[in-house]
Length: 287
Image (cartoon, rainbow, N blue to C red; front, side, top):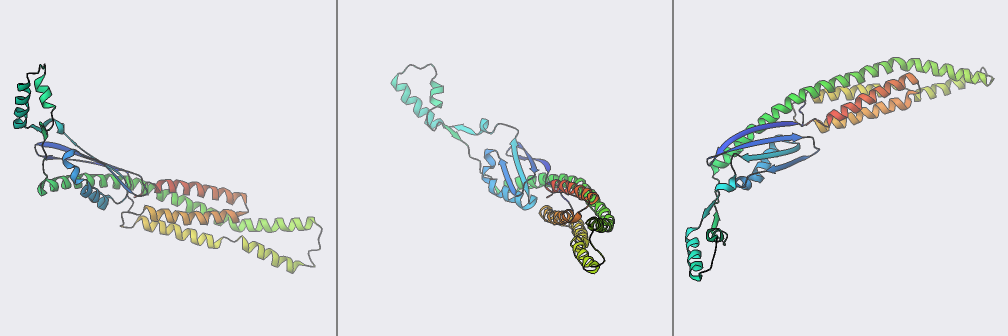
């Protein structure tokens, strides 16, 4: 089944009297690239969260943003009252004039102490479970997008096969036209064709065999069928495989073009190349 690399998921959780919101989105990328923006409390979980994302989402440019409903820094400090009183006693004995004694004291070293909350195992489980919910929503988004991608790929693959059938119809006509043109050219040279007709026939057969495209038809059909088969796979990550198959399809189409030697067939080949380019563009979005 086809999954898109594009997706978005959201979840929320409560931790230490604060509500947190997880937003995670994925975009196209050849590799797995994870970018995180975490509040200070969750910084220590960055590596396990990255691994959780990589194991689940597999591929894409992933952006994880976890935000809180309050300013963490607003209530994350306390006053070291003993030290503050000690500073105040020393300053008071100096009898120095000051318009803002309290402000000056609060700016002295170690008066304001940051509170470090240690996350428990239960806290970490809450965060990881919320991330799982957000990623489940993102995967559901990817699946819906993937259905649209799959429909488009099937449609364009069908068009390539239709153009191939038209080339198959035109191929024998092209051979007869080519034979007639060669004979007319030889007659125009006023050569004695009867004397060397057997040899001429052999050379013509040899030349026409070079233009035979039966093998290309067979391989092109096989590659298209394999493309369909891979799309029906239960695998999640099929984008790279589809890209490799599309390259093989392109080789057969190019060979058809090089052997065409006919304006009508060339037109069909151009149409096939156009559809293949659109397929390649869509494959860039496939997981």
